[in-house]
Length: 410
Image (cartoon, rainbow, N blue to C red):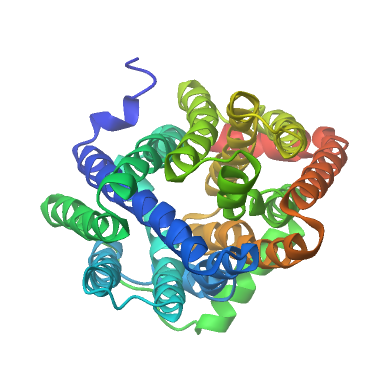
C-alpha cells in the first residue's frame, strides 16, 4: 500500500488529491444530471450526442493552445482562475433549474462554456503534477493516482447523482457540483510550492505549438500512441453519451439504473488505475495499452447485445478498464519522454486526441443512432476499437526499442 500511494507522501499532492476528488465527484453528478435532464426534455439520442459534442469540442481546438499556455504561466494561479469559472457555470445552472426556467439551450451553452474552460484547465492540471510531486520518479504514480481519483469519482458521483435525482431533482446536483469546486480552490490556495521559473518569452504561440507537433509526429511511439487514443476516443467513448438510451429504453430502468451502469464502467476503470498505480516503472506499458484496447472493444460488443441489467453490469467494467488504461498509460509515456519545457504542450496533444475527439464521435454516433439504433452503433464502435488495438499490437516491438532508452534516462 505504501508503494501504491507513494506520491501522496508529498504534501502538495495530498492537498490536490483531496480537493480534486471532491470536485470530480461533483462534476460526475452534474454530468449525469445534465444528460438525464436533456433526455427528459427532448427524448432524443441525438441531443445527448450534441450535448457531449458541445461540452468537449472546444478541447479539440483549444487544448493545444492550453498546453502552450501551461508552459508559459504560473500554473497554480492559472488553475485558480479556471476552477473559479467552472464554479460559476455550475452555480448558474443550479439557479436556473431551481427557478424552473431551465431550457435546452441553457444546458448546451453551459456545456460549451465548461468545454472552453476545460481546454485550458486540463493541460494545466496534467503538467502541474510534476511540480506537486517534485520528481519524475514519482510522476507515473501521481498520474495513476490522478486517474484513480477521477475514476473513483465515477463510482461515487453517478451513484450519488442517481439518489439525488430521484429524491430532489437535477438542480441539487448542479448546486452540489458548484460547492465541490470550493475544495479545489482551498487546496490550491494552501499549497507551498518552490518559486516558479520565469515565463518563457521570444517564441510565439503558433511556433511553440508547431514545435510540439513536430516532436510528436517525428517520434514514432508518440505518433502511434496519440493515434490510438484518437481512434478509441472517436469509436469507443460515444457509448457513454448513449447510456441514458440503454438505461431507459433497452433495460427499462430510470435514473438509478443510469447511475449503476456508469458506476459499473467506473469500477473497471478503478481496477485499471489501481494496477497502474502499483507498477514500479513504465516499461511494458505499450503491451498493456494493446491489451486494454482489446478489452474495451470486446466489452462494447457484449454490452451492445445485452438486454438484461446483470449482463450489462458484468461487461461494462471491461470497457472502463480498457479506455482509462489506454488514456492513463499514454499520458504516462508522453510525460516521461517529453522535455521539461515541452511537457505541457505534448500532454495537450494527448488531451486533444482523447477529450477533443470524443465529442466528434459522440455527435456522429448520436446522429447515426437516431437512424440505426444505439445498440448497432455501439457494436460498430466496439468492432473498430478491437481492430485498432490489434493493429497497434503489431507495432509493439518497434515501440519497445525506441522507448527503452528514454525510460532508462528518466
